[in-house]
Length: 262
Ligand code: ZN
Image (tube, rainbow, N blue to C red):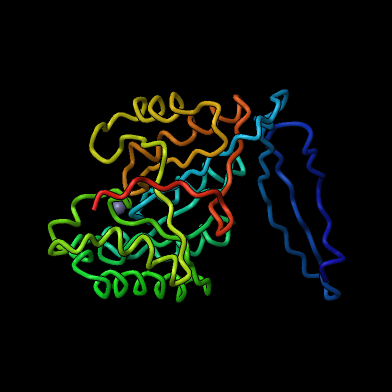
């Protein structure tokens, strides 16, 4: 019956605005059914801006959470793809659907940690048991086997010294993850949402002021924090207007690694 569907008007994607379209179809017995769909056409943010070839990788750690849906809406509005380094912390429970939604909408699902307890750094096995647990969870939800990771605390963390009995675990793990087919990313722009600030305006400022002439920017934010999620739209608007583009991390993306301190 698809061929018999009548639409009340067409959407002009060159003109911004809201379009209400009625779809109507009748069957041979004369039953008629209509649905109305609202289509919103946004103005393209990059009009008149020369692309600079500089790329921003927005990354969100620790989620998903109740704030992730709103974040996905903003990313969709600007057709920006990002990377979610997910966990299985209590705050994520009940939000498996958001991992699936993010995946289906073209974002990268990266692996952060199952427990987010720093005792994972006790030894190689405790680390990989935790990593494989979150990999399996993502696999069960999406069917996708992610090998894109971010170490809790970043590869430069020193908190691992408290757990590893002097084994210099980060020096070991940073090599071992790659030997097992993973790649890890740290960040070169910190939004400050991990404790330095709870101000949305400050987060926008921290990120947009750090954008310069480099080719690769990996931004660290946390989608379990409302005040940080609320900064994303302005960050996107600012960066697009300055000619930056956004990409999700893939196994081929440029490496951004911190120095190892343990
Ligand atoms: Zn984290």
